[in-house]
Length: 400
Length: 82
Image 1 (tube, chains in turn purple, red):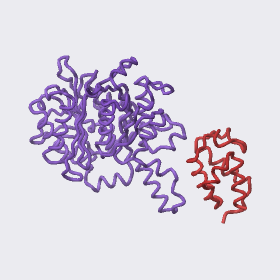
Image 2: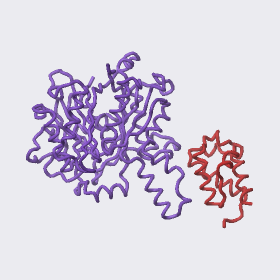
Image 3: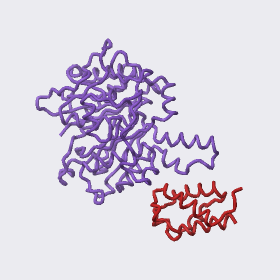
Image 4: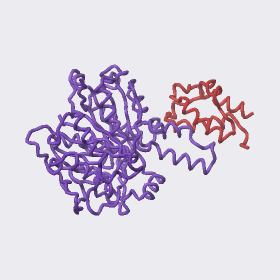
């Protein structure tokens, strides 16, 4: 018998500001964090939250992780000097797409300009993709299993999925999880642009007929997951249950999704089976919805294929319309927003959606948030994340 | 090659470098230990990079283990440069 997993704390840093509620409320109300074609976390100043030493010991992506982590642990009611469980049973699984690429780029510039003696000794510990996982474990004194997940834009949803399994199977009583990304750097911006993945107009317009690529964003989120029984014993107030997840691989192309969305559809089916629910119980889908021509078409097919008639009855919206694509952080940041939306029984909008493409006929919640039509029933949502490499992850959540 | 290496010059370099590692300037003296200043092995690798650039002297491995105080570091750099 699998143990039940609950989310007891969430935290986020995003282009819409610092804080999970800030992210959700601003998105719900139709604000956009995208300016000049990118979603920079402009309200984030590391010196507001971190000491000089903490800030210089971490790449920007790990800084997002620590600040979101402090928010999440505070909400979970964890006393950082006296954690609620045996610390060897508290893990940390944390995702990123690229890790400390800003650190890597600065190191390379110094190498070229001044030679190897000027390369900063902290380059490796700052750029490594598991740096945020290690920093979080150190910051809070988590002595359980900790590691980073790397699956491009599915990385942080993979982290949440693995954290869930660790608790379900009794390997951990709690896991600090999520993901962060800080890739608004010259090399990665140019590389994504050369790949023709980015919107030349700089508009994040998921599912709209005119969409022409994604808009890059940065940020991070942390979720505190706990065994439901143990959380109840300590008097915690859970925000949501993680019912289960499904993950598959397209095994099709290094960057393009399968045009029929077969891998994504299979992941949704696996998530429903793992969660023990039927398509008819799903009230909302937080789509991957990148605003690329290929993803949004394939994802629409996948949702229709896996959910059948139910797909046409429920809202499907994309957080990326308001914050851009946070790459490896996307899944976790969007999951925090989804949890808050579910708790309010609201489907936040897909901003900039105006023009329908033939065959893409779901309710994408254009422009304005709308209430979920659940008549007092459970508020259950799917959140999707798909990554370059063909990685598909779908997590199923229920609001409490 | 760098100019004459005096204790005063090295002291100035180190005192100016330490605050970037998060040390309060007022806490720094010749007698303060790196442990008390919360300067660990990673900070010392960065400090030694600054010293090497300025004085052409490297502080590596065993050296770093021998220096406990700011004064130790100053003396070591001066003696190596001499």
